[in-house]
Amino acid sequence: MNRPVHVLHVLEATEGGTRRWLENVVRGIDPARVRCSCICSTLREGSFLETVEEFRRRGVQVWVVEMRRAPHPVHDALAVIKIGRILKSGRFDVIHAHSSKAGGLVRLAARGRNGAPVVYTPHAFSFLAGGLTAPAFKSFERRARRWTGRLLAVSEAERAAALGLGYRAEAVSVIPNGVEVPAATAPFNGTVRNVGFIGSLRKQKDPLAFVAACGRVHRRRPDARFVLCGDGPLRHECQEVAADIGFGGSLRFTGWLDDPRPALDEMDLFVSCARYEGLSFALLDAMAAGKPVVATRVPGNEELIRDEETGLSARAGDAQAIADCIVRLIDDPGLARRLGERARLVVAERYTIQQQLDALAAFYESVSANGGGG
Image (tube, rainbow, N blue to C red; front, side, top):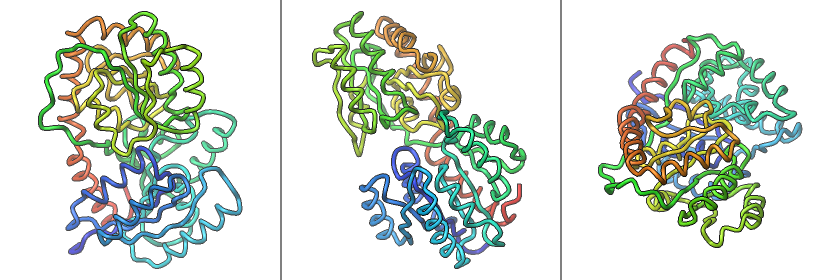
């Protein structure tokens, strides 16, 4: 192909890691190899309109098609019709749908069409959240395999979940998320005083486990300080639990941060309490900055955090185990320093943004040339 591959990205989850994934790719992928267009919703996060305008200034064509996160027969049907009309233009070489909602709507809109191959990236399958809706979501994912040209996973754990749904091995590829690795980081002597969390305050990230763990640490090491960066439906409950614990000002809530890097710079230790993950950008950022990490043993996290090598791990939902890991690193500066140094090396070797972008460009070229075949 003598021209760039034209990729249409479709995204409803315009917040958190999926938003960052899209912004990184649109801003950073080689325009000589890949041309990006987008269909996006602004219902989940109104500030995404700023990103839409930025994309348009870059010459990226963007259609705003409002999509609701929760299932809604009427609104979902309208979104499928609108997306279908855009797909019908036939101007795209690859359609790339992101996360469960857009992934479902796009594959419904594209089924039966002899058009561009559809690539789907779950960014953590929605049925992993559990609950009453999980069986229905899992059933739909199984059915939607037939309308999926390729599944592009962000981690080996996500690939394994896709194979468990019945995808053929040759139809699933893995390109891990990537981050910028600072050229130099301030020397870290291993002293842990400031313990932090960055993420959406939702069940998936389990900020309540972080607050509970910090309460246990506070009783044992009262000089420790804690910061919780993020916003979401569990913020009020987190604040209520913190008030009941009585931190005396040692736990700070920042709310949502457009750029969490200054907050990360102030942390000596990063904690991920996630109950399930694709491949966490926040965790990668902390590792790239040379921070020691405590993370839950869940798919996605386990690829990055090898216990005693690149961090310490604890069972998801176990506030006491998480607290024990934090206290251990407070008490052992040498271990904290070694874990942070090793974590930074792992990201620099395997998870840089340039590695991700180069692999994506090659992937899109291959999919376009082969019509979505494995």
